[in-house]
Image (cartoon, rainbow, N blue to C red; front, side, top):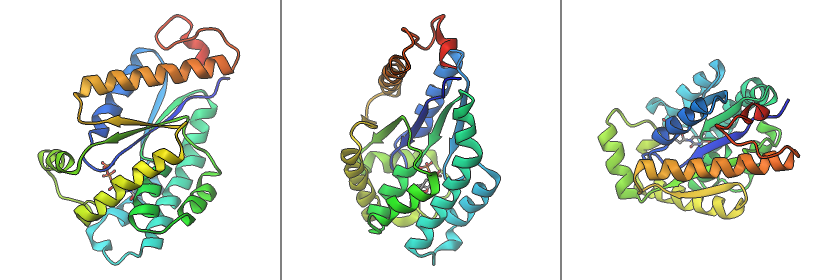
Length: 229
Ligand code: TYD
């Protein structure tokens, strides 16, 4: 059986990730490809409990190291019990955040340095996405989108602008570190335009994968698409 595609979405809060994830889910659905959608932290019963601890405003005293380890712990549970089994059975996986969030928020945002890479290597067994879509938007626009979305800000969202700037700069460093895997997307464009760009990246990825597997010309949506599953 052909392994599924593993795609992660990244970006600071308010960059329009959820909208793009939903559009890509629909795209896979219309192409008749099974797709599992997950969010981090969370995505498992244990991970959702860890998520509550991480995002709860009552967790204000949490140290940076504890924070990094809890994100990694939630991820470890998700990789072993959900992501790996799904990929192995040929399902595509879309993950709303993955290791790059820990690199941007904990390695760079919290200045924890490269130990964050090491603990995530341990947590994931080295499993990396086939492609990561990083949505970048300037802080003012992201703040406006978050305000429009409403709701109460969680512990990380309450960190303020200086932290978010550090995270955004961190994301750009991470994109430079993994240029083959990460696609930086200008999130100030219209949602449909971004979605088209993402679809085209996904199609190219599928083509590369099909070629690497020695199959011929299977693309999402055509009559050969079963070969990908
Ligand atoms: P969430 O509500 O899922 O944010 P969003 O809708 O923006 O994805 O909350 C997740 C928060 O946790 C978000 O502020 C980013 C942060 N985070 C980290 O700091 N490190 C991580 O490894 C992950 C996965 C998330």
